[in-house]
Image 1 (cartoon, rainbow, N blue to C red):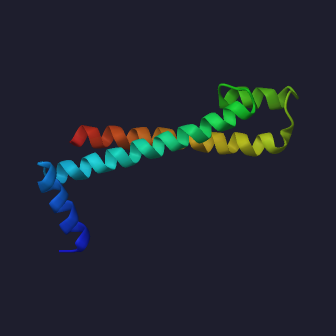
Image 2 (image 1 turned 30 degrees about the vertical axis):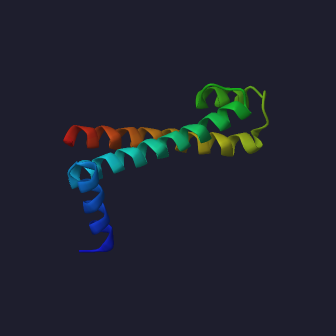
Length: 99
């Protein structure tokens, strides 16, 4: 048994839950924290352009309200962040279904 497994087993015993319950709780905590960080990055980009959505930033670029550079790069980054949030939410939901 590796040190990691021993520690996980000990923590589970110390807290009175099963290793599976501890593992699920750990995964959920990790994913929720990751989601929180991604959301903060998303909000930072939106605030930079005074926007509430990626679509609004796209409209501001097309209307000439904000310069194309670096707004296009930020828009791509924002869209990737939004995709990451969806994937994280799907992972959280899948874990919750099976626990």
